[in-house]
Every structure is written in C-alpha cells, then in structure tokens.
Image 1 (cartoon, each protein chain N blue to C red):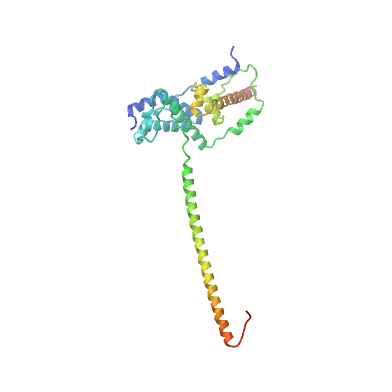
Image 2 (image 1 turned 30 degrees about the vertical axis):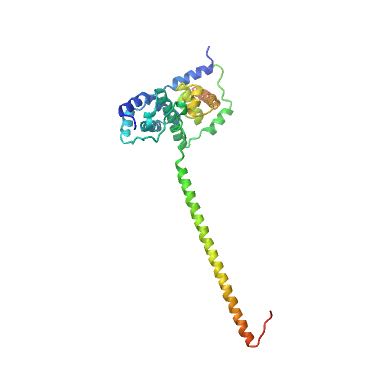
Length: 174
Length: 123
C-alpha cells in the first residue's frame, strides 16, 4: 500500500529543491533534470511508505536521483572523459594568488557540466549537498578512496578550466 | 589567510547552492501520481540506509532480457536444425544401403543368368 497524497505532497515540497538541483547539476540540462526529478518522486510514491525516517528518505532520494541522472547521461552518451585527460596533462595551472573575480564571472556551474560523470557527481554531492567523503561513498556504494580521488581530480580539473577561461577573458579585454 | 584552493572551494559552494524546482513542479508530480499504481511489496526499502540497497542496485538493462530470449530462441532453432539434418542424413544412409542391397541383388541375379548362359566370371 503506497503513501497518502498529503504525505506525498509534503515530501515533494520538502525535497524538490534537493532532488531537482542534484539532477540539474549532474545532467546539465534543465528539461532533463525535471524529468529525472519527477521520476524520482513517482518512484518514491510507489514504495516510499516503507522508508523509516527523514534521514532515510533523504538518503534514498539522493541515491535514486544520482542513479537516474547518471543513467540519463549515459543514454545521451556524453563522454567528456577523453577531454578531461588532455586538460590534466596540459600546463593550465592557475597563477599563484590569482583570484576568480578578475572582472568576469567564471561560471563554475557551466564548467561543472564538462567534468566526467564520476567527478561531477562527487563534486555535486560534496559542494552542493555538503556531504562528507565517507557519506558520499556510502551513498554511491564506492570505496572512500575512489570518492576522494574523484573529488580531488574533479576540483583540479575545474580549477584549471576556470584559470584558462579567465586568461582567455583577460586576453580578449587587452 | 585563505589558500587559493580554499577560496575556490568556497566559490564553488556558493555557485552550487540548491536551486528552486521549476514552477508547478509539485503539481505536475501529483497529477502523474494519480495514475501511477503503487506496488504492494515489490519494492523493498526496509532497513537503515546502509542496508537499503535493493533500489540502488543498477536495474538490469532492458536489452539483456531480449538478448537472453534471442539466444535461447536461436539455440532451440539450431538444435532443431541439427536434429532435422541428422534425420535426413540417417534417411539418406538408409536409402543408400537399400539401394546397395537392391543393386547387389540385381547384380547377383544377372550373374546367375549369365552363368546359366554359359558365361563365368571371376570369384
């Protein structure tokens, strides 16, 4: 027997920002993110009356959202992994003391979409959801070392891309 | 004093704040839920988060069922063809042997007749 509509509505309103935001940052597309988010809540509706606590609900929602969002990414066959390796090898190191707000807005959220899926998921869960690496590891069913590696490499890649973007902007302004 | 990496992390956290769901999102989900049947007990969500793994298992890909079914059908078809071919071979062998017996018998008859006519053949 599923949950009642009032309880379901309460859960949607209480968690829609979290679910939609995870879906958006992982898929990178607004429309796809809404589809994913709707599917997550419908799956909750089908069997969520067995979840025991708010923490359990939150854990379950994050996990299912990540799974559905990454499934969506894979169906679209977006593969930035190859380009990521190139970025890691090139000498795109930020200058010492360089700040991000050198007269421009470096849209980190846009650069996030260029990260390979495992790094993107780790960064979103760490920096959007403020989860610790061991919590992320439990959610994803991965070793903690893997999560930490994806976080470290993801952040490094983001910094390099942001630095290049800033340099190009400064060059254009000159 | 903050390191550049710390400032970057802080900037990232600011940019990655949660955003609002699209307007009317909850209403759309409620509409869809009105036509969705709820499972009785097919979906397992029991236990503390660390053991609630069933829903997190990756679902078997939809194509795997079709692929397995196709392999089974192909296997049955091949087995059937092998059986049919074997039966054909056996039948052909029987027909050959029958033909050989008929031929041998006919040759024997011919030999007898020729011998009666006074002609003899080697052993």
